[in-house]
Amino acid sequence: MLLVFGAAVVGVLVEAFAPRYMRKSIHVPLTLLSLAGAFALVIVQVVKGAVPTAPVAMGAIAVDGPSLFIWGIILVLSFVCVLMINDEGHFVASAAAVPGSADEEEAEAAGGSHTEVYPLVLFAVGGMLMFPASHDLLTMFVGLEVMSLPLYLLCGLARRRRLLSQEASMKYFLLGAFSSAFFLYGTAMIYGYAGTVSFTGISKALATGSLLDPILLLGLSLLGVGLLFKIGAAPFQAWKPDVYQGAPTPITALMASGTLVAAVGAVLRVFWVALGNMDWDWRPVMWAVAALTMVVGAILAITQTDIKRMLAYSSIAHAGFLLIGVMATFDKSLQNSKSLSAILFYLLVYSITTVGAFAVVTMVRDPGGEAGHLSRWAGLGKRSPILAGIFAFFLLAFAGIPLTSGFFGKYAVFAAALASGSEAGDSLGGWMTGLVVVGVIASAIAAFFYVRVIVLMFFSEPAADGPSIAVPSMGTVAVIAISLLVTVGVGLFPQPMLDLANQAASGLFIR
Image (cartoon, rainbow, N blue to C red; front, top):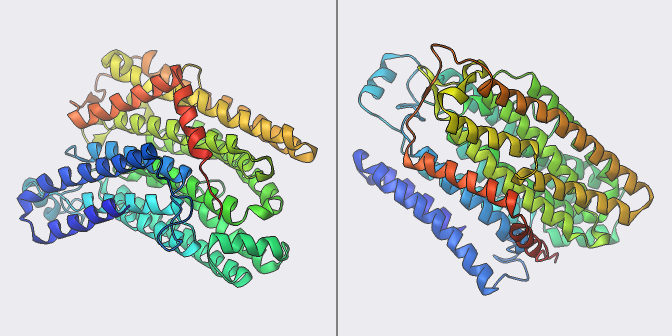
């Protein structure tokens, strides 16, 4: 975290003092090296077995097994997203210029660029690292804000469809403001109940105090709403597809992968470590949210005609699948690290596939920018069979087809949920079984719109004025290759990654 934040601060100094023509040549290696160095530090800490057994930084940060696993995922995702960001043509020449004005044309003709994108990304990544590893609510709120504020700006910097991008930025800002307000008000209520914002102190207060205190229940509700906003769970997903559609595609990829990983990690940290003693009070609500999220994401994705909006609703459905594991994970009476490891594994395989899919989207171009409308993808398999085949494979992984990483991700989550319900017995078994049934039905619905795109690409005739395929940069090629390698490799040999997730899950401490 210190390395990433330090590099972000250096990036700000570069923007302030370096000549404009030198900035990008400094930012790119600085950003990539800092992310690679941070990932190397995570690996070194794991290999040396030097994982802390208590919160660090005066009790503010929990660097345990799940934190390190999530950090590794976020750093890999941010590294490959920076490779996409480095491509020319994604970001506007002058964000301050009115769209379509002479000032904008002059900035483009002069080759202007917003190199502050790189330090903004580093600050966002630093917030993503802090958010799921926080060990008290105020630190978590700081992580939430540091993660979100740069993304509000980055969403409004798309080079094409400028008004749509600015709308996405405003909507994401308002959505994030609601999320932060709910979270902070919930923090105040929890503090009023427990007298502390430390997760350890909150857990001790729950063990000795009333679990039906109105202040506690209000605080729990508000915290849950704030976190579910960040995940994009229904019914809090309203503007998420608009944001995904309007933002520059590399930023969309970073939000769809890194932000989801960080938010799910934060949910686990809050509800397991701090509020786990009252799981039965919120389990019915979480059940309804998970079921609604899966159904809404799957059904509304069918109606979409824009590829990025379709992937956005797909992301919402996958958030619902993750919430199945979240419900099973919180049954701590079973010492159920299996559910936690299933969630970590799912986060890894889904997020990597997501980045690869958005990398493919950046390569299918119309004269006005990326070919967003699904009709423009008709016959892509005949114009560029390799690219269409790769995208089809990513879609099959989203659908959970066997021999892909997505299949084992869903299987791990569903199996952990069923095991949790059967071991607990009583009514919990029925809750979990019913939720898994809803998940299977939502997966079947989701498979329809994934297969629809595949059929459109391979069994439709391409239009005479069909989209062009951009010549990929080395960065985009690397992103697609890494995503494809992980999706195929984990699909064929899932056990090593499952073992790594199990090892990380067993390293969780609650102190």
